[in-house]
Image (cartoon, rainbow, N blue to C red; front, side):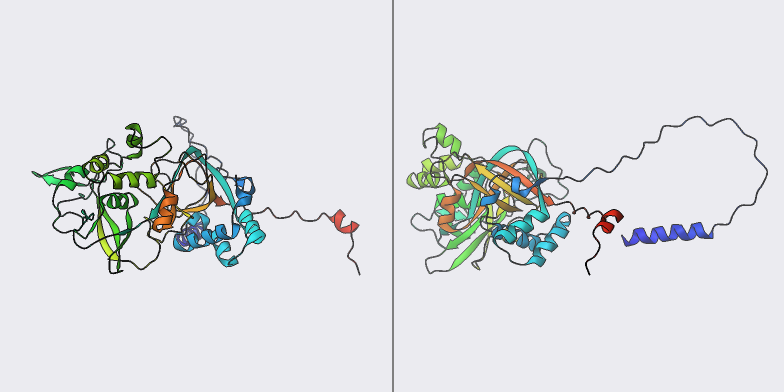
Length: 403
């Protein structure tokens, strides 16, 4: 803005200093110039999105409006968006509110714009698993660090035939080739294991992307995402259902993990190998706080979602409404204000969200039962209120001031 003002001031100064030209001879008219291409006419500015009042959202009256306001305040502090600056400022300045006061403020500051059609809501969590620092008993799966031969070349050009691939591979004969799949990686010995886990636990840790490892002496470490082999994620729920390993409505994360544990060995490994994607980790101390998402801020249990960054910005605020669950034992409906703070390998598309449920086994059970039809609305600033029209003179004369 400052540069624009200086440029405008310079233009005004040049205009003020210009001298008035003296009259001279009138030029003889020449031939009219050939008509040039017609200049495009300036288009009127597009009106801002009006959006829906929040009280028209499904489930709005059942929302915990104080918690929704706190979610927005936290998101505004951690991952502010320029579009929401004024609304965020008002939310933060208002401080903690509950009940009708929180509801009224939200309805004043925000509107909702529908996002696409119907999509899919799933959920995830920050797992806590037992681990060992040496291979023993059922703890036979190594937590692998990023391999030395895994490279991502600078200036990589995306390949449309491999969506989501960032160029992960290895150099063979001076040429970049795709990195091996899960089965090939699992078949080779790991010489630098970070820890040892049960195979099914490691499989789910890779799906979640990070998690806490609990050691026998009570120490806790955090396995943090370091890299992948660059291959696409393939879910195993549908293949397990199609092979008759699990019933139609029994493909929850809890049911899958239990089947893998009950069939640990070649049977379980063959099923896990159907997902070629493999995740490598690094180890950090666990401070007991919530996991950090791709937006590099701590996630809020029940109020943060993972989205497809090709469609949505981190820090964007949404109203989600997930209904019609397809898994047995599921909570019937998830509605509320959430913030986009993360992403994931399986999160693709405009109307697609993965709801963060928190840490630990209980959060994992809840997360594994979420597979709902999803509708989404993006929260935008409400248009400024129109000023009240001035009182007419006649009206002023009709109601004289009282003595």
